[in-house]
Amino acid sequence: MQGLLSNFFIVVLTLSKWISSFLFFILFTVTVAEATLPFQKQKKYSDPTHFKLTAIVDPQSVKPGSRFTLYIKVELSAGWHIYSLYSKGVEKQPLATKIFLNSAMLIPHGQWEEPAPVIAWDGALEKVVQTHQQLVEFRRWYSVIKPLDSGLYQISGSVIFRACNNKVCNLPKKISYETKINVLSDKN
Image (tube, rainbow, N blue to C red; front, side, top):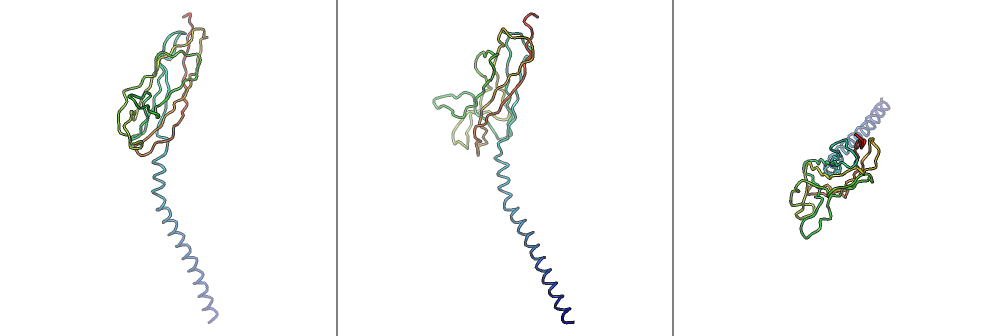
């Protein structure tokens, strides 16, 4: 009987060690998960994907030499902004948004145009800046060079900008865009 009783206590002690190890593991995992939750929220908060870029032309079909408008539309998440294309005043704005076009078949007319920027305090930079928020549409007039065959042509380029939210400024980001334009025969 004594051997049976001692074997019973050995089994109980072994089980209690396993149960206590299991409970310790559960408590440790929950504590670590709760402790890292604020850092995970912060990571999502500073996620640099707070924008959508779209390029379109109007009209979609042109004859060589005819003008059309290239629109670059940037949509931003609430609370985020990008900077104006042009700096005003004495201080140059090193954060200005820049738009590039990769095409030798297009002739630009004038400069890029933008809606009136919002002059606002930028908490991340601690100064007043010219910004665009939520939705901004840049536009520029172009024409197609004259000796060009009819057909569908790709227009591509890139936009370099910094997205900020008054607490964090992302590093400058270069995003490519592309759209198409239908060049009609000059004879029609």
